[in-house]
Every structure is written in C-alpha cells, then in structure tokens.
Image (tube, rainbow, N blue to C red; front, side, top):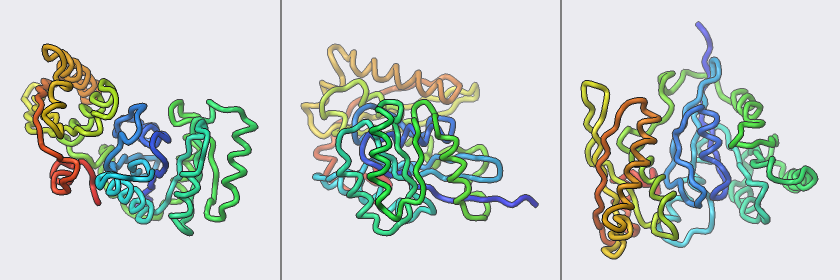
Length: 296
C-alpha cells in the first residue's frame, strides 16, 4: 500500500499580500476570490492540492492588520488561530510595499512558531532591494526557509510547493482526490458574486455588503439556477447597488454568472436582488449564519 502524506498549511500575511492568488496557483484552480482591494478574504477558506502521494490543505486566511470593527477583530483572530492550528505556516510578504512594520509584528505575535518566508511579487522590485529585505527578515530564528516567488506568474511557486510537501506528516488524505475546496457550493457561489461587487463598486461600500445564496437548484441538463441576495447595512446603500435603471446590479450579475459558468463548465441562471439588514456588520449571529467568517 502506498504511503500517503497530508497536512494543513496556513498562508498568513497582510491584506493584499497575494495569499488568495498563491492558494489558487498551488491548487491549480480558483478556490479563493481575488481583487486589488484589501480585506477581500473574510473567512478561512481551504484549498486542497495534490502532489503525488501528498495532499496539501492550504488555509487562505484574512489579511492581518490593526482592526477597528468587531468583525475585523474576528477576521484577524481567525488568521492567527489558523497559524496556531497548522502543521506548517507560510508568511507571505508583498516585497513591493514600502514598509514592513506589520510583517514584523505578525512574526512577533506568532511567538516561536516556525515560519516559511515567501517573498512575493519579486518581479516588481530591484534585486538589490529584494536581497536587503530578505536579510532584514533573516534575523528571526523562527524563519526556517525563504522563497522568492511571484504568486501571479507562478515563478518560484513549484519550489515552495515541493518544500511544503516535505513538511507534511504521514497520514491518510482528509479529502477525496477530486475535491479542491471545503466551501459548499452555495458559499462558493456567494463568494464569486461578492468578488464582482468588490471589483465593480468603489469606495467602502463593498465592505458593508455580503452575498447570501438563497436558492441553488440544479437541473437534469447540467445547468443550475441560483438566487442570491446582496445584503446591505442601510437603506441608502440599496440604490447604489442597483444603479441607474438597475444597470449596476445587471452588470454585476452578468459578470458573476459568466465567471460561475467558466469555473463550473455548465450554464448558470443567476438572479440577484438587494435587501437591507440594518447594521449587520455588528451582529455576530449573522456572520456565522451567512458564512461570512468561519470563526471569531
């Protein structure tokens, strides 16, 4: 009988470090939504990757920053808890940013937990500066290895993945070989639509919305009907989502539908509408019921 290896890898970092992009790159398919805006990932999402007899369970976590709102505090708590629970932790750093105070703070708060450092977006900076950044982080004894990668292009990701496989304990796989995420289809579809909300809407409004899949109805011909509510926190936000003559929500619906069809490989009939749940961001029960965050 062939030996199997399986373990959990937490991908930690500041907002917009490229965590979701890295998870998608290793899995080889889109399991986490990606946008240029911070705080896109709200909950811990598992991406499942196979390499030979190794199964990597990658935990894509919310970005770590100084939180103000209660929900933000829960998101950051989820990220740190993922790091404590994992067999292996990757600290992903965007080397194109100017300051690294937040990254140093993450290392300190993780205590003596061994870390693999992944310096991301290396194609965007001068090699000499890159070496200096690497040297600055080499001072921490808990950093066991350093990799220089581009999560977007895939450069260096195979080397990182091979190293992660070597860290996995022997044991049976936790998931079937054809499963790539732990998200139920309803939550996955909600995330796809929320990605378009973040991409299409400006300013802070996307952070005061969430998407709830109210109906998922598959048909014999392979297509699926999906009814979703875009939930906002105040009445005044509803017309912004709808847009002039409903054009904004039609655009969001079209783009989300096309992305779902691309990933699922079959037709999707998507119906979006907007509803108001007053001050939902301060109601913990809603976070969990809607799957907005997984813990906290």
